[in-house]
Amino acid sequence: MRHLKDNIAPPGAHAEDLHERVVRQLEAREGTVLAVSGDYPDGHHVPTHRHSRSQLLYALSGVAMVSTPKGRWIVPPEHALWLPANVDHAVDMLGDVGMRSVYMWPDAMEGLPGDIRVVAISELARSLIVEAVALPPPAERDRRAMLVFDLLLHEIPKLPERPLALPFPADRKLAELCRQFVRKPTARTTIDDWALAAGMSRRSFTRAFQRETGLSLSTWRQQACLFAALPRLADGEAVTRVALELGYQSVAAFTTMFKRMLGKPPRVWLARPSAKDIQFVEASHRLSLNAKGEHALLD
Image (tube, rainbow, N blue to C red; front, side, top):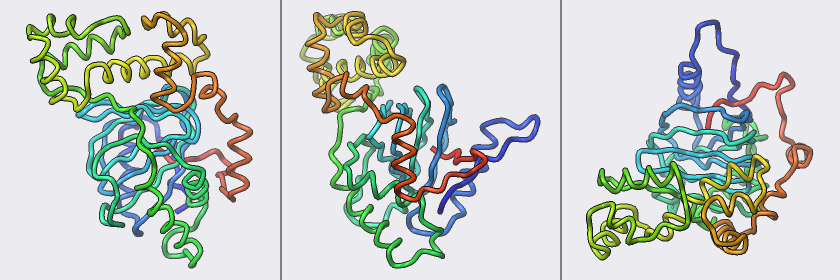
């Protein structure tokens, strides 16, 4: 499958209606595995939807934020989000985003992840995804094309998970504290501050928070601060300013947290592939971009 085209909406049409139409096209397609490319401008919002295939949502460039009823996930460049089938989700683009998605039936292969997760994309997976987008529809695939998709399926379970989820508690009081923190994140708040605000003992609070989110408060706060930092860094703000305004005592402390979460320090992460680099990679893998600039609206 090369592209599901984003046709220009007729006068009066809503983006939601257009997106629903494209999702229906995806649902109607045959084939165990499909690959789709999409390029989105800064600030683009893909409304809440679901699909019956599982999805590997790969950010070739730019940063995407995916929201589900269970929380939020950030997808920086060279990472992907694994979305099991039938999960309601919306996507917001933080900067211009080059997205390449692979859709597959849940039973396409044993061992595929059963939960939502952000994974780092290996060089092999990156090459396979870019190549898969250029391959013909299922009915026209030759043996080589089938091997590309088969190898990609086998590579997905091996992709290392990254702690870029921000799950929200189901408990209303804890969820409100989390929302307040997301609105104004700071590394300086303590467990005792949160426990006092929740009207709980420190021990009861830590147990409840771990039970509700699957994370310790310390890890959750670090990830929330990272969520706040990434869009600002992507917009060109200085690392020092972002670190200090998030309440870190030093740039070194912020850098340590950042590297632990993303595997790279901020300055290395910010040295993302340029548009020319991306075009070269795609051309080298025979990715046929539409001459009119049409692209998939699928997330």
